[in-house]
Image 1 (cartoon, rainbow, N blue to C red):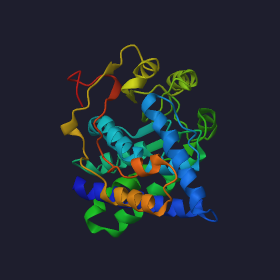
Image 2 (image 1 turned 120 degrees about the vertical axis):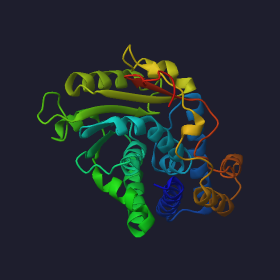
Image 3 (image 1 turned 45 degrees about the horizontal axis):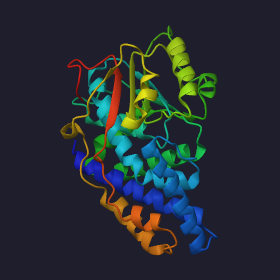
Length: 312
């Protein structure tokens, strides 16, 4: 599969969803009001670099989509792709803090990139996230990407991977277990249950996540757990992990996507030019090119550890 074509499709999908969402959110607002909402959201998201989560309201979610989401997809894909190739059973993934669908999209790409398109190994990804705006924008990104895959013959494998990946989202783990979709240990046939949390752990939510993760272990008995975090959040992420979990290293040459998202970067630049210059943060942040693989310390914690014990 041509990962450059997949990256371009993702880039186009993100830019299209961003424009549609901005048009919806800005309807009836003055340019000054839009500029203030954009500045507030960018400032809110800036706190992530210091371990402070934003509100994840509609404006936060829009700008998250056009900056953090590409990196999260890249991280999720690097974390699960090798394990998927080794899997021999249907997968049931419980994705804590699913946000804007980084893990489902990464899982679909992993299915599409498999050497053999294994129709007998379906994938279910069930996301848990309290932010309805994040879950909503994730659904829209998924639909837009699938539309592009259907319209592009060269992306037939991606279309297949997305069609083989199923699931839905919930606002809480309790709702997931009430849904009837939940995997419970001991059911027959028993799929392999995975637990993932891609950059979802903060000081403010770690105690709640500890309870959720333990409940998942008690009820669903996952066979693989993958948690990623920014370096500043490592102690909190480690507190969720099993004692046997190991810190791995993301080798930058092993990421599936590299370079920049040109369509998403152009959209941000055009928005910058449309907004009044009432706050420095919009001009500064919206001028930056959007990278797939930013130069910062992202850390995966894996259980069971990789065979080589160290690198992805």
